Image (tube, rainbow, N blue to C red; front, side):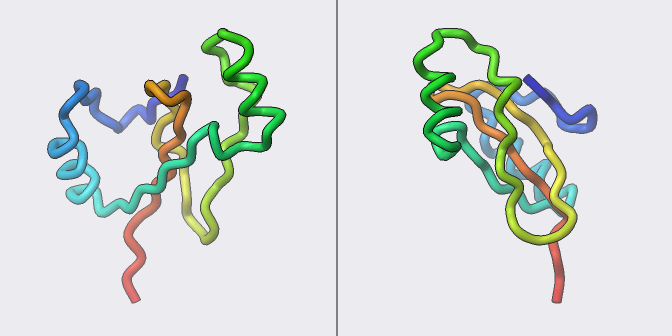
Length: 89
């Protein structure tokens, strides 16, 4: 999968540490799941039994400045974390 080089390696259950790190970096994060991809993509992944999802191009959230923070596997399939600096009015 993919892990941004500046993103620390959090252990499962480190939700508070992860949220704290995101806040310290001044980031906002949105998660996109392969489950929300086109049916062809999600069915290909879930029916294959293969963990490879390199053919999936996660939808980028609307707006400027989004970058991929990570793509990782979960119990519900791959998810992409998009991040960008907090936009202040």
